[in-house]
Image (cartoon, rainbow, N blue to C red; front, side, top):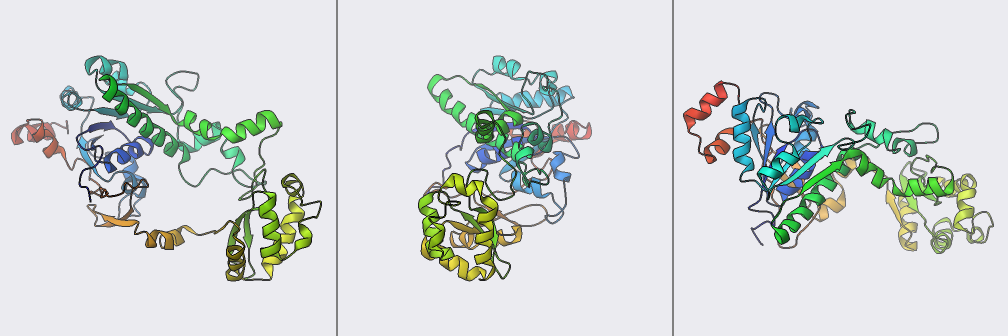
Length: 395
């Protein structure tokens, strides 16, 4: 098993908070990069106080910040900016998701840094991008989901809904990650760094590709349909007689015929004009669901899952979040590990990308300023100098 991770030897400095930037840098850290997280003295990243459900720590923060070092700096102080530039002089990547213009006001804008450090890769994550009428708008996840139309197509016919996870933040974080990795590859070829911009809004709008095409060329937006689908039926959640929720995804006429024969045991439905084609099934969705519901209602979940398995029809169990914690697939593939925090060990999932023969990095989640002394010592600061900076409120 290899002990060397792909990004070992790379240093990332990140002025980050909340979700988008911390997600991108955590993935870099998972692959071996040294990530130094710059936090405000005292409170640190405000995501630390979102909740206290993980032994007193924030669930968001524990999720996003393993494998990192925490350095507190009051960046409004010249002494702190001097330390920042000492770090940046040896860094490969600088990531920030501060408020619009905040980095530039501190002299940490991409243009300034690229002039000073030509090999540095800068990544700026914002709500709506660096230009346009929404440039300075507040950009919380729900607001971005709403502006991008995601809320309009999520939920039921009665009411729209946001997604249950911070989709805009996650999308931007993953695009930032891919942008940084691409820039690192380009730097290997050219010797030059890059300036990367990623916005939450652009990220979600990109993911809205199918609904946008459907609306522009079909004339109407995809209907909100809960777990159903605008263009496929039967698709969604069906409840068996014992209350087990089974999710179906019958996507073409061949699968429909197999479903009728092996699961519904109703061969007559294959040639029924209301259901014979995909378009017909969507047009007669209410009648179709009534037929499927009637069969599911007289059998328990085990029986319906057996029929679906035997017929090789795609299905899933609709699980509660607590059920995912004990999901048999995660257990069978040994996907859980333990990471340390100041509040004790917590369970954590392995990185989603598995590199065969490479051990995953699962180092602790840092407290605010946990690495102040070690980082500054590495820059040549004496213990007395560190104490002085700390006492003066710079750290």
